Structure formats: structure tokens, C-alpha cells
Image 1 (spheres, helix red, strand yellow):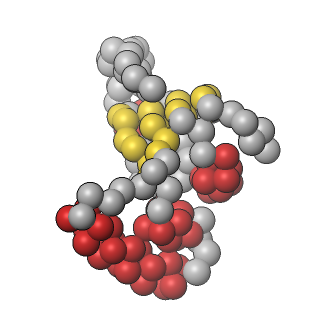
Image 2 (spheres, one colour):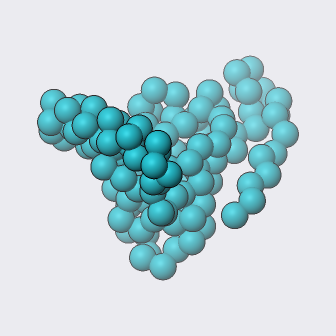
Amino acid sequence: MVPADVDVLLTHGPPRGHLDDGGKGCPQLVKEILRVRPRLVVFGHIHAGRGEKQLSYDGFERAYSGIMGGHDTLLSAMGMLFWFCISRVGSMFGWHATTETTMVNAAVVGQSMDYAEHDGIVVKV
């Protein structure tokens, strides 16, 4: 369990569905991140998932996380479609999620698995 006041979370592996090469991450970690909402989450382990992305706390993300967690798949898929449409309309009016988490898969080892092939990732928080 992640403490509620964490701003930076460092884990070995990724949350499921986020920079994890097609769902190889941890479903429980997704739930903890959605609960705690840290500003930054850094992980590695899944080398092919290397990169950076923003996680917005909105209806679309809740529905997506439901699918990644294997719960209410059909209902969550319908929710994703609904929230996708809402977010597109909202973006035309300048609406956006007020809270975001920067997620970074900082794996430096490449496909060869023998040596570091990538430089570090610099994140501004």
C-alpha cells in the first residue's frame, strides 16, 4: 500500500496499461496510483515500454484502468467511448483534467538485454 501523501513514487515495474509493452504491468499498482495521485511515477523493468506519458484523472482513465484490471470490460469500454467524446468536446472549450501524474519508464537497457542502450530521461515536475 502506497502512503497517501507520496509525491514521487519509484517502483521496479510499471502499472498495467502504462508504458508496459501491452499489459505486462501490475494491476494493483494502477489502483494505488489512481488512489494516491502522485505527481511523478518512475519505473523500469519492461524495457520495450521505455518512455514518458501524462496520466490524467478523468472518466476516460477510470474506464481504461477498469479494462486493464480485468473488471467490467464491456461497461468500461462503453465508458471509455463516452468519456473520449466528452473530452474532445471539452478540449474545444479549454477544459482539461486538473490533476495529472507524469509516468516514466526509465529503462536504459535495450532489446539486446546486454548493455545500456539509452540515456537517462530528464523530467521537469
